[in-house]
Amino acid sequence: MVGDTLGDLSGRLLVQCRLGQAKNAARVASAHGTGLVLTGRTPRQTVEALREHGFTGPILCDANRYSGRRRAPAAVGVRESWIAEQHDLGLVALTDSGYLAPHDWRGLRRILAEAARQPGPTVAMLPLSARWFEHSVDGLAEEIEHHGVPVAVAIEHTKDPFGVRYVTRGLLSLLDVRVPVLLLRSDISALGALAHGAHTAAIGTTARLRRVPPRAGRGAVGFRSLRAFVPPLLSHHPLDEAGRLAPLWHCDCYECAGATLTDLTRTQRPEVSAFRHSLSAQLTLWSSLHATESPVDGWLDHCARALSVHRRLAATQPTWYPPANLHSWIQDPVRGGRAARPSTPPSHAGRG
Image (cartoon, rainbow, N blue to C red):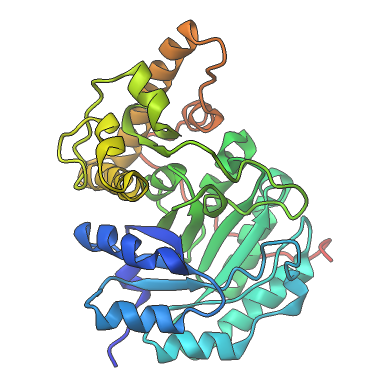
């Protein structure tokens, strides 16, 4: 079997979905020439069905052991049987890592060391508390480079980790390591990560798949109204709200083909139309950014324009607040690339 390689993932914006959403997500991913991140503990049947039905895009499998009320800690290590199953399916394997609490250096080293020992293409899954990016990102980068293994980062937060400036700044620093860094379970900030050099990034299909939800408390995980991604705002909003505020907003994504966003509510299955549009619109935006001479400049310009639209709406809508992630990206601009991380040997002193 000719399987996926890490190179197949380079520069791609993937769709991260639950196993039950794979069919609809694969339709959108195929139209944009990209792949999927399947989230669940028993993905084999879904992977095989996708391949049997002609899906050729790369697939990653996220076991999601790090999430939920009974989440596993990083200390449990990784299961070689899980990794072997992914290799048997012809996939690049993601480790089934547990949650990395702040300062869990022992758990981090165990994940990285066990991933580095695997015989096939393997990426160390690092489900991180956002606090790693506040004071520990340099040590985190040193450990990753010391073990020399590609990593996939997912970040815990109640809403959006990139609404916190130190997370955005810390991720940009982490992207300077000399191994591939993937960002999973993200929102529109996945495009910012890709523009700044992430090897791969993934946008989630639900609020819970756009970050790692904390174990205690539900956070912003469910909405009563039908929501969709609104390109001029670079964020998800209720469709009735978007239609009321800007009824003539058109979308040129593959699914909408120039229709207004309110047209999504008039289809036979509005929830499916909104699902496909939201993914397609973000994938379309990344394709346009990726094709430019400077994706970083393009991304920051899009953020600035979206923030301007939000501010105009906030001037007339008392309860309207611009999303914090746009502020984070604009306040930490890195136009034209970043300087490489200095070549210093990793130091393990002082970390337990």
